[in-house]
Each structure stands twice: as C-alpha cells, then as structure tokens.
Length: 69
Image: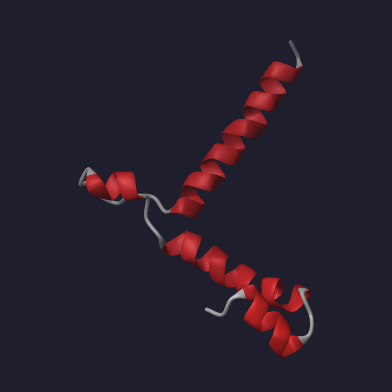
C-alpha cells in the first residue's frame, strides 16, 4: 500500500488516496481476528470489525439508558 504522500503526488488530489484506502482498511478489519482471542486459543475468534460493531451497539444502548436518568 502506498503512503498518502506518494498517492497525492501521483494523483494531485488529497481525497483520492483516502477514498481508495478506506475500503481496503475496512476489508482488513473484517478479516483480521482479535489477537487476544487467538493468543488464548479461543475457537472461532471474532474479527476486529465484528468487535467494533458490537461495542458500537452497546454504546448506543448505554447512551439511551443513561440519557433518561
């Protein structure tokens, strides 16, 4: 993967590299398993993207619960 500076100099556009790199990053988050789960030999470890999704849902629920107090 090229650095942002290399990509900007090639395209002349600072938003193009981030637009191209973002799907690649998202895909890596989807296929990379959580290291702690792997280190503890847990079968079927969740991916980083799975974990981020679960935590974000918990944050939304917690915000709803605590905002009514």
